[in-house]
Image 1: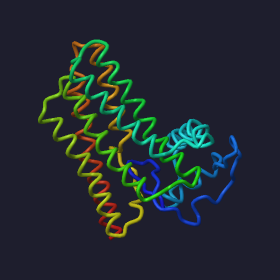
Image 2: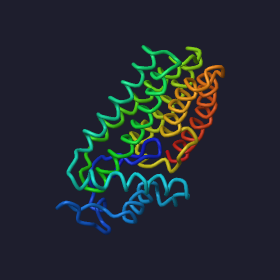
Image 3: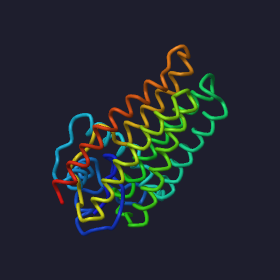
Image 4: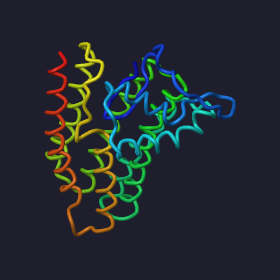
Length: 245
């Protein structure tokens, strides 16, 4: 099965069903087409139908990942690039402060890191190049990315205590999900309101907004929203895992 974390697809061990479905030839390599990719997503989420927003997100990921898959780009490379961009964003925000080009650049880098966060799993699933090592690398890099988001918000003016609360809730949610999977819950069958794309979007948008409209405390507002959603998301995931044990 492939691992599901933060509502996104990430590779783990290949099973016999992983690559069933329609394939298309791209630059000499076979990859899953869009509908087969969406069917695979449903399988990984216990048969749950994706809503219009999720289908649009997954469809966009498939479109961007298809040429990379056809070119034979390594999913692990995409994972590492995404983590590196997030760390670079945090560094720029700390050095440049909450105003000016540095904050805008930090927000843009986080947004691009979010794209890479989806592309690695999409490429792995579309080409059948999934592995347990890839899943482990992806999980570790996701946590690095979450920490980078928290640092960006702090650098843009959010109180340290609030950043620690929001970041801690994100880590706690993902720990409960991972621990549940370690106890045999293959799929918690829930996409919470505080998944990784939401956290990335909050940090990226607040960094950019802080630079453009500096008289409003966007970082504190965004971190507060993250914390509230984090409480709800943690309860959602913990409840779902508890019911499956």
